Every structure is written in structure tokens, then in C-alpha cells.
Amino acid sequence: MRHVFVQPDDSNRLLVCLEHGGIIQSFDRGKTWEDVSGGIDYLDIHHIGNAPGRNNLYFVATARGFFKASDPGKGWQRAENGFTRDYFHDFVFLPGSPGAMLVATADKSPGYWDRPERAQGALFRSRNLAESWERVGVGQWLPTNMKQMVWALTQHPDDPSIVYAGLGAVSRGRSADANQYGAGDILVSTDQGDTWERLPFDLPADRVLYAASEG
Image 1 (cartoon, rainbow, N blue to C red):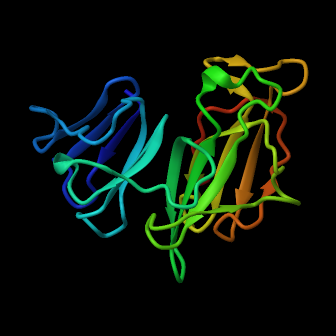
Image 2 (tube, rainbow, N blue to C red):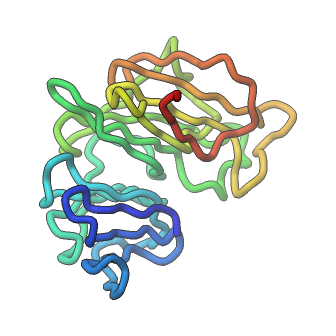
């Protein structure tokens, strides 16, 4: 199990990502389940959610594609216009005018990341609910050829326009190169991913990130 999504306006409805198994759905808080993986040909599922305030538009990030569905039970369609990566992990919805989606990606799956260029991580943004995507943060803030993977995205609990990213050059529980690329970073953005600031922490490759309020 990789991710559990609880429908915001109906806590009886659950969608569960099985990292190697597909997507299952329940309308009775887990008493009964149905498989809703139709349209996804490689069932390595990472993250699922619906567009804010809408029950007719869902998204899922997988190891070999990014998909959307009006109803998960009726099948998924690819939503990858503009991506230059093919491995997808966490995503978040950011408020604004317009609002935005931000998704963490890499080039191919972790089995390939022992190569010199490592993960080739990248962040992409959509401002039209996955109709098209653009890469963000490249240049002063993120390397064009980023060896680290952005494993985790999470928002500030009191201000959802602030997003944190957890990075690390790690594959399948081990560092891709402990001598040079094993360190992790936590970055923060307040402008929908255009610019990023590294937080002053020294830590190993980060796979999980959670933000909590003080007090």
C-alpha cells in the first residue's frame, strides 16, 4: 500500500494505491472493495487524488504514466502533454489565480538510476488540470540535470500555497552513490514552484515528508 485517499466530502469513499497491484476503491469505509485500475497497463501506483472541489476529475501518478479519470470505475486516460519524464510520484494542488498542480517526476524507474546521470529528477506544473504541463524551477534553483529524485511533496498546514519538496538520490532503499549523491535536501517554494529555497538541514536522502503546525 503506497497511498490512501479519503474523499473530502464523503469519508465512506476510499481510493487506495497498491504500489505493485493497482487501485482499489471502497464506498463503505473498507468493508468491500473493487478494482478500478482499468486503462493503466503497468500497475505500480504511487499517488491518487481529485481536483479540489470536484468529484468528477481524479488523477493518479504511476511508475510509467500520469493519468486522469472522470470516474475511476470507468477507466483512466493518460494526461502527459508537455512532460519530458516518464516516472511519476507525489503531486499536490496549489491555490492561486489560477490554481496549479505540481508533480514530482524522473526519467525511467529506479532500476535505471545507477547510471551516471542518476534519477534526472524534475518538477512539472499544470495550471489547467493536467491538460498541459511545463517544467518549473530549472536554473538558479534546480539543476537542469538533477541527479536527485523529488520523492515527497507536502504543503504548509496553515498556508497551502507554500509547498515543501523532499529530495534524495536513493533507489530501492539504498543510496545511488553514497560517496557523492546520498545526501538529501528539503526545498520550499511560495510561488507555485517557479523558485525554490533550500532549508538549512543536512540529512540523508529523504523519502517521506510531513509538515505540522507549532504548538
